[in-house]
Length: 381
Image (cartoon, rainbow, N blue to C red):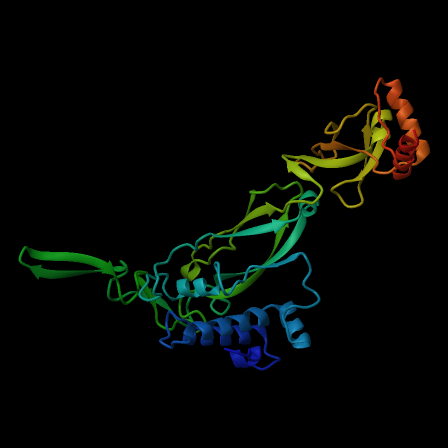
């Protein structure tokens, strides 16, 4: 599709449509064009278009940006907002709908057995500063959530859930076939109730009797101070919703802390390079460095005689310890002694005197003028 159509036109809704109307329109369109149920050769592209429209119009901030600027990207999407609704890859809405239509690779003929929802997993990347102070991240992702119309029952208003008349509540039917070896019995999920054991006389139109619908979810994730890469946060009940009111799975958030331009982290300790001029390293000095917390200034006491690569440790100025009641790791400063590239004549003379006093025999580097005068002197001699 060369040009993107208006998102409201794609879903067939008015520009002032409320969220429930938008969701109903999305589910109706998605049921028509999803590749698992449609024979249209362009079904995949059509579904991507429908899902992209819904991913924008179902998010208040994205919709506001779209209405005002013609694009979902715009002011208001701060660093605390992370969108995992990837319609072109990952555990996106396409995978969610495949599960919704049946769970198998083809999306057809899957079991509707009343099971708990599955756990879902995402990876959330935070900066080292965010990990140090703790932060709140608002994330948007796709999942099967409890149906808003039937509240998870799968039944329309006034409908009743009854024992399946075909399997009598067992969820399975047994067939008997004659063969040359005698009668052979086989058991398979009941085609009437799809293995659930019950049927609903009037299923909910929104979820088609499942009690759950594909949804773009938005929740806040509280990232605690001092968190380290690989730590998992479990958000109860925000994984895949269960079938017809069964318990939902959990959302498991694996936190990754991004590399930092100044600090290297080892456990709760922070390592950094601190440049110290040659004379200051020899005489001793105090250097002020910027800490990992906002506005923090840390004094690093460099002892006299410090060599290149030596370390100076400042206690309790590293990363906050997770659950440590305010305690922190260490700040370890690796000293980089810097040598001046240019010196005034007076400074050079002073340094030469120092070298001679230390028993060194410095050979001063002659200037171009000195070398020319020496050459003339040699010729005259």
